[in-house]
Amino acid sequence: MKSLASTIALLAMLSFAGLAQAAETSGRIISMDANMMVLEDGTAIAIPDGMDVSALQPGAQVMVAYEERDGVKVATEVQPAK
Image 1 (cartoon, rainbow, N blue to C red):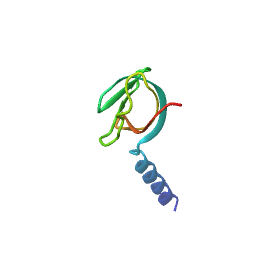
Image 2: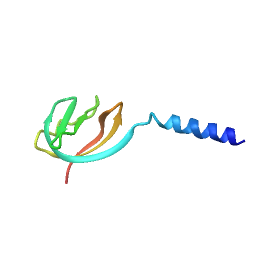
Image 3: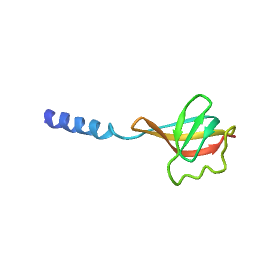
Image 4: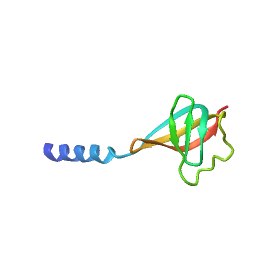
């Protein structure tokens, strides 16, 4: 029984290892194009296809929720900072 429990625990840990890590950051945009924005602290965040960020431009203060996928920060939500 102990062996079965250990096997199940190991499988559970391995299945969660590939999940994206969610995080948030905020700052001023220093550069941006259709696929990427860079904040003043040097954080580069990829903008996925279909995300409308047309109202944002360099100099804007933003709050960004993102997931890290294969070492790349990918925006899940971008809002002007209040």
